Image 1: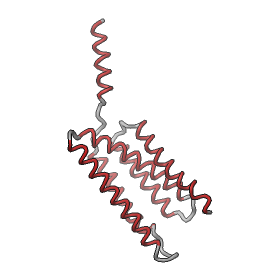
Image 2: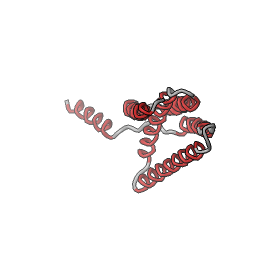
Image 3: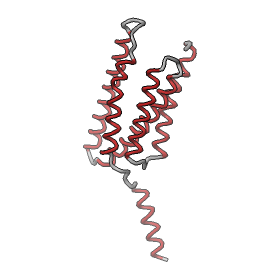
Image 4: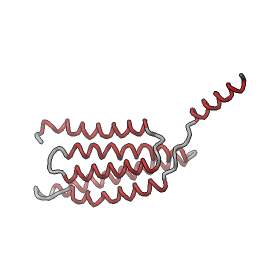
Length: 167
């Protein structure tokens, strides 16, 4: 792709992240199977994008980011809902730190492999990491708890129930 297109290609990736966040906001009560499906479809999008020789592979990567972002937001919200007190902040901070370290290692790998010459394919090692995402999808399916009822939903239901008893 010409250099002038690069900002638009990066925009496609961010639109994928935003779309995933929007999906998570609208489908927060998604079942564990649904969240696992988002990870699997996101992984498929990344695989297609990494193997694409054309600039259109960025579109597949953007779709992959959407699925992974939706699953990340939903599982993170459920994780935080299950923890109480100081444990909550510590566990989520450690999880975010480790995820950032893993991302930095992946980018470092691509930079190192990309520096080996024009014939080097930095996407090949990253493709080997995709099965890890599929294992994560299987783990989400079996271990992710269902969505909690929010306190605003339960208080509005109790208020409406109390009002009907008073009549």
